[in-house]
Image 1 (cartoon, rainbow, N blue to C red):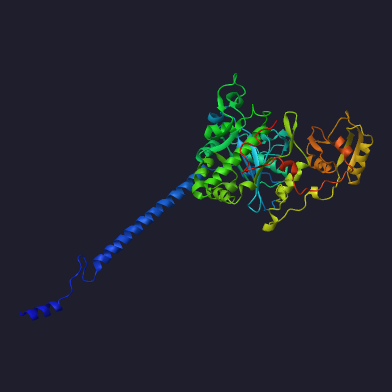
Image 2: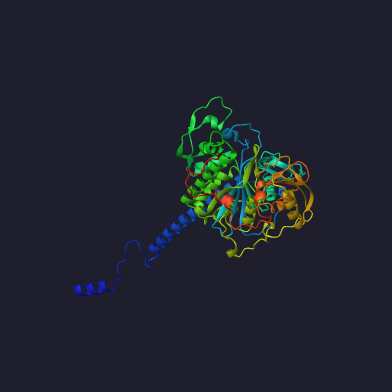
Length: 508
């Protein structure tokens, strides 16, 4: 073959194939498809693992959560206006379930409500106020369900924290405390949650500790007054971070600070919760951050059925992420000492409940109406006073003559029945006092609307008696008290979640 023929033949040959490629290019395409399938399989496997992990977490949370029997909630409940939400938060001092290792005491003690906060989340989901109810407050405990299915009779003039132990079980009776709060406030409690020593300690560990301020050096005897000596110092004065057992000791300390009362301890507990909220919000209210918190808390938490699943609990927590620290406020129900116990001051407390029912903040801002929620009907304190069917005896507790007659005229004009007038055993009363018998608190509160600043006191015998004080003698007339726009009596002592950690930490 000549050179020219060879060149022509070479020109007719098929072009050379790249290495590893078939006539139709199928080998490389198959390899590419195989790589894609492997990558997709890896991604799918990872997604399955992540999903399985999420499912496991939710199943774990669901397994952690305990609920109390909703059958114990009273059938006679305040109307639900479905604007804001009211959440009752109870700190139990039960020693069962290993809690005695943290708090000491009898391992079989079913406990009481050592701490109680009624959290009102306003309809705008931008404001919240937590109202502390002192454990020693004298209240009426309405009928509560016992383990055998029977119901107790109303208990009058009883310490508030006793309601939690009415259930006579290791978990106490959160429903009974809820019934008591609804009876006291006239507010529908939408959710109730109880957390014990272990849950509280674990929660503070998960967030990496909470910044607190100690008003003075604290020693072992301050935590356990039964000690024979002062013991070691357990807290130095000033700011510090606490977690676990240390955090629990901080919120439980009562003796040796201020007047050693529960009122002072409430102030430090409010400061602690404010600091905890600040820490959680700074870490970010995301499911990733909330899941470890929820896992720690739910291991020692009992909730109402409405929060009885992981989805419901986390959804509730996420619904509050828009509340600013400055708009998160802590107050204590208006109170005064009555011997060694605490009495609620009226009509200031009624004004507070009325404000929450109307979704008004402490400074009078309407945090519900602009959201289109149903507003409650005007409360009794906003309209005319009707004394129809209410009998009252009047005693003059001052040296001012004719005062009982003046009060009797005012009461009669509003439909009250005056059963008698006279002088009190002493004439040195500075404030008007209204005593009332079992089941007559509501009627007594109606009477109090004609006596500005009057204090209500329960009595063991039937009947309502007004003992007039100098405050009534100095008043120009007995005009019905209106519903206030602001609540200075509680607002002046309120704590915001962004307040200085070292301010307002004791009482007396």
